[in-house]
Image (cartoon, rainbow, N blue to C red):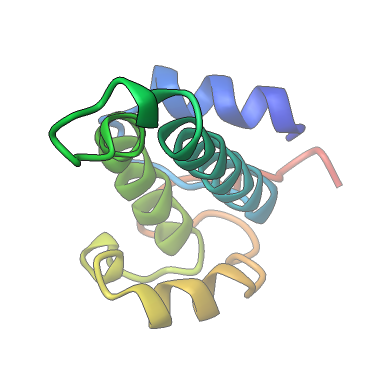
Amino acid sequence: MGFKEAISYGFRHYVGFNGRAARSEYWFWTLFVFLLWIVALLLDLTVLAMFNTTGVPVMIVLAILATLLPSLAVSARRLHDIDRSGWWAPLIVPALVWGFMRGTVGTNRFGPDPLEGKV
């Protein structure tokens, strides 16, 4: 899965906690979220700093809210790929470590292999 495809799939299935996500989908999504948050932070610090009198970083808050649920869904699907419960997703450190692991080859209890027929 490519970068644009991973972003599109992440937003289209933003509440899709079922199924599996390949490493490429997970890491492209994570890269996108990281870059989006950096851009939002830069906007808050430069452009919006002149107009924002509340002190709340509006753009970063909006970026976090827009990507929180899809990020949890992609993380849960990635954990499903290594045959782990999606409930591990809120625990960031184990989820990141497991994000590097190769998924279960073939079908597991969460569904078919997302890479089946692509390798």
